[in-house]
Image (cartoon, rainbow, N blue to C red; front, top):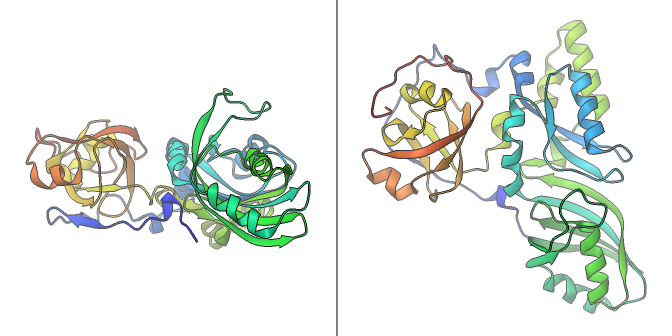
Length: 331
């Protein structure tokens, strides 16, 4: 069984010993429900029928939030994991793209094929493949490559093949089934499809629109928070798979104002950062400050005494959450 990029284990290295002032900020688990609505995700179980856009609009109406966005379109007939970002969380939706997706699919062959031949073709497709988006797609129809991380056959019953596939974002499973049928020389089409993972979001803690509505009503009418805390995930969990840098308290507010992160502002870093990587910037309390592009690799961050470590790209944390303690060196 293969894994998605979001399931890779990560190691954190401490650069310098730092402490955090409890008077500022708070761990994500201590946020109020109102704060979760501002910095949260809903791991939604999309029903068959509506478009992803329609479902996001319903979530927005149910929770009475100003902004909402989803982490990867599902066709109307497809069900399963649809991460929906709320308010400030919308800023990190694009960060989910490199995380990978997993689907469970039923493929129908158009003629009988020996099981050995089917399994061999599945192995051949577990690699980098080339696809041209379908005619009905909203993207430009140019040939492009997509990575298939794993393809596991779960069951074969006659001409129906139930399989699980882990793939790069933007892979068309309907086209994948068609191409598998072409190589097998019998033709094939996609029957049913369900997304079971979208990066760190999985079926294990998925919630329905009904769950969401009930949780919100109980909270608004009775002040019951338990269900709301179950259906809304802190934004930090959405980007936990990215390489991270942890900032000293003194560097947080400057980054909140859009400044680049200098080396003296670092407290801890991921062990495998490469220059150019998208990285998540966290406080010592585990709060997501924003996203940026690494200007140094891990070795340089550990050895250099000055210079820009990360160029800030998107900021979620509001300026003033931590006190202004700017200095010329960024620490």
